[in-house]
Structures are given as structure tokens and as C-alpha cells.
Length: 280
Image 1 (cartoon, one colour):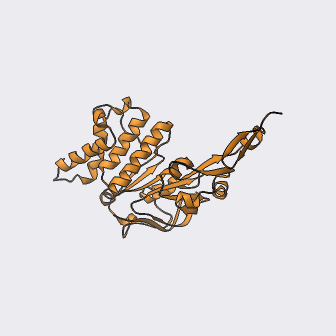
Image 2 (cartoon, one colour; image 1 turned 120 degrees about the vertical axis):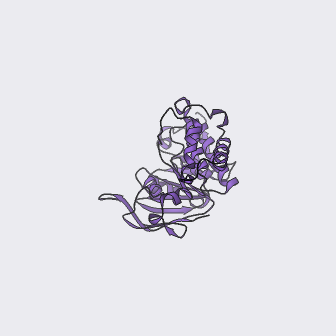
Image 3 (tube, helix red, strand yellow; image 1 turned 30 degrees about the vertical axis):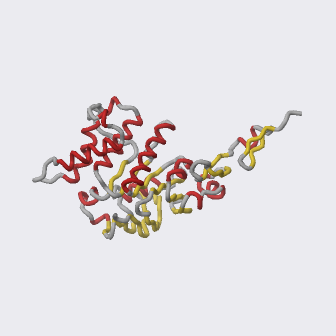
């Protein structure tokens, strides 16, 4: 399994530096989640790791090779990315979209093979889309469409999958559905998964390794249980909160306070309790 890391990487657009002098090693075979406030550089970093954005300085390595010097077809066999808001012709069917994931393996003298077909079928079954193979993208729900895009990355059959906000615009049920699918691919197939999420609770629940970004630098990284504290949430998100333990997973749950502290004086939010005082 190839490693993915950055060495002294600086990223930005023209004169706007977003990330400066960043050293980062993505744990192999784990789920890594990038979190932080808007504009902190999460998506910028993910794009650079996928070679969609050229660093202003420093180097990104895929395995032992600088990714900037690798052929695109070689990268596409080791690393796949699902960007925010991916786009494709609406008349494409689920099957036709997922087939796109096999293009890195097509050569001049090699047509569509039994292996290609098997990988597409496997991706459809893994994402529960077998019965929708002939349905156009325009007739899919948001959750079904997102699963189709994830199936495309699975058909690409890479050891590393990068996803930029894969749960955006999905309701709670579909968010969990997508994250459970990715968790299953990590646990069953051992794939290295790196994704950007906005929801700190879901990030903490599904991440093996959590990376928090602030002002273009890594503020803290490690297991959610080790690093998610009230001090971290205050520093990274400028938010007062209380941290509790999820009784099902043992992972942190962040309860934002905000106006709650002052809006309902008859309630006491302390030590995990919301206890109403008796009326006089």
C-alpha cells in the first residue's frame, strides 16, 4: 500500500497563501478526517494531495515518488478523489458513470476486459446500486447519486481514496449511510481513506486519525478520543462547548453551548445533564 505525505508544502492561489510549510503523513490503511473552520485549508490540502493543485513550495510524495513527477495514469491506479459537487451529463446511467473508473486501465491495444466488468459489478454491489444500474443520474436521489460517485472511485480500485465533503447536502440518514459505506471499505478492503467533513461529531465517530487545521497549519492530530477537547474546539472553531462520550462508540460528542447558557436560566447544563429546577 503506497504512503501519502507532504514535506514542507506551501499552498495557495496567486498571492493568497493558505497553507505554509506543512509536514504531514497520512496513516496507511486508516480513515483520516480533516476538520477545521471554513477557509482553514482543508479542501486546498486535499486537492494538493491528489495533484489537482501544484504546491508553491515543498513536495508531496505518493509512495517513494514525488507525485508531481508521476504520470497521471500511474497516479490514477493508486489514488482516486471525489471532489465537492462532481459533475457528469445527467443522461448518463449509473452503470455508465461507474465505468469511468476503469479508464486508467484502458490502453490502445487493450479493450474492455472481464476484469473491468467485474470491478464495476463489485463496486455496484458494494454501494447497493445493482438494481439502479440503468437509471439515469437525473432520476437519482441525493444519497443514491453520491453512492454512484463513490462506486466510481471503488471501480478505480485504488488503495487510497480522497473525498471532499462526501456528506454535504445529504440528510442525516444518508450521511450515516455514506460514512458506513466508507467505513466498511476501510475495514474490509483495507483502503486508506482521507476525507474532509464539517460535522465534528461524525468526524470523531468515523475517524481513526483526526487532523484539525487552524490558520493554515495543523493545530492537533491524533485519535478523536485523545485530541477532541473543549480547548481544541474553542481554538479551532471559536466555539464554547462541552464534550461527552458517545455511549455506543466511546468517541467524543461535542455539544455547542452558544446562547444556551443564557437563554434558559431555569435549566442547568452541567456534567452531561440538562436538569430543570423546580418552580418556586
